[in-house]
Image (cartoon, rainbow, N blue to C red; front, side):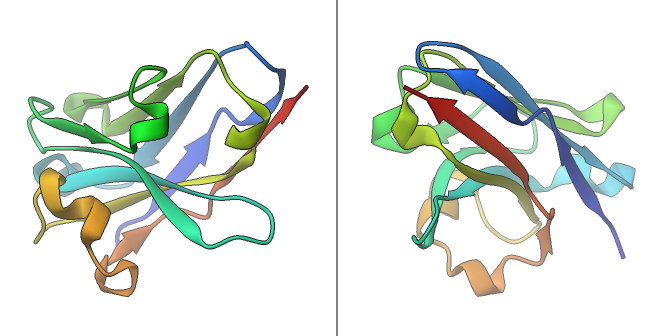
Length: 128
């Protein structure tokens, strides 16, 4: 079974930046749609951003669209989320996901239980 491992989380002040990484265990993830989701304390897990297998197409949650950038480096088997101008409301556990059957455009509306590959997550805490 393939694995996804996130890194890069931590504590940052409001207005600061962080870059999250998600490294896949196998090269086949390079042909999958990949995405970031987040779960704030006491809330459901929400879609944040998705990228097509080639990296050409990206989609975002409206509230992060002008602040976050999703990208991928397939030879390195790595997905990234560059986060800027962070707000306390961005505090959450961020998880990456991969899906061979869904387009990036549909990842935000995809039933999360149907997405086959998930990382365990990395905690981002934004202080005010």
